[in-house]
Image (cartoon, rainbow, N blue to C red; front, side):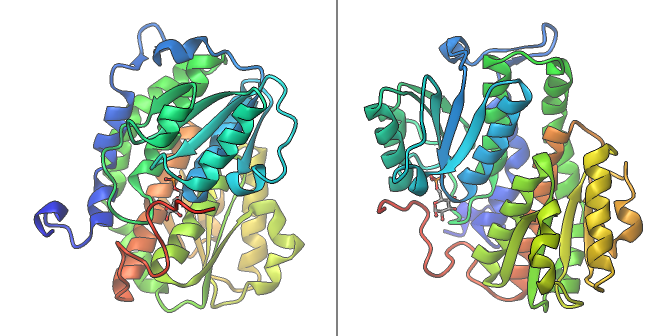
Length: 355
Ligand code: G6P
């Protein structure tokens, strides 16, 4: 088993460090920068007029992100928790139904896709496992090519899902910023490496390892990142952690914010959205909560933060992938300091085959 970890203390840390390679594999042969085009095989002909994503856990957060990519291209898109979809199927029309599932075996996701198919929908699997049930049952499959993931809590597969969903959106819709997104995807593996080489997240973990609870906030593309940051923290540290849409904080969760609850705020760019999130940071700062800004320095977030996890400048879509790397490392190092069984958290399974 030790050899399998290649010298890392845990599979999860090894897999976190495999992300530059996993992302390169996902993009290889699928992106042509010169012609600003994406080749995802016959999937390119899907041209959906609507998209419904179904997924669970970490994959659901990737699905929320994916839905935003299609919305940005003018295509109605929604992400559903697979377990809820199966019990209350929304009108499907001629939407493409996309199951996002690392393992390709999650019962809730398979069940939602079967329901959609039984109502005549076209289905697509975005998965890591060739020959998985989801890949066999769906009309089409897009592989994320992350390589095997042993750690129960997903890490590298989330980054690869986000990259693959970008390919799917670019390959099946048309948008004005295709060239910029392709360039950002090309730069992503190197930028992920620079974050992996920094010790900033480990220092943050040391500072806040005794906290009572952790909150994560983000807007737009960074909202799924906030949700994923909190899920990772819960799964491997057993600490209370919640992710919120930054604007929603004041509608309830703010009551939980104290000087003992660090708030991680993911804020990129300097548009209206970023300015509003900086406003939300001020609200928690006024309650004496420690603030960790995960930011590219283009806005005022760092001014109101106790700690900063820096992001290189890039397209907001790619920034989501990069911000998540910092948050993975904070959770990992917090769990390591607390002595948790990181690769196999209590009560959890890598692939859940019951509904
Ligand atoms: C389990 C795992 C999670 C994962 C979820 C969905 O609950 O512990 O890490 O996100 O299943 O898995 P899938 O294979 O469908 O992506």
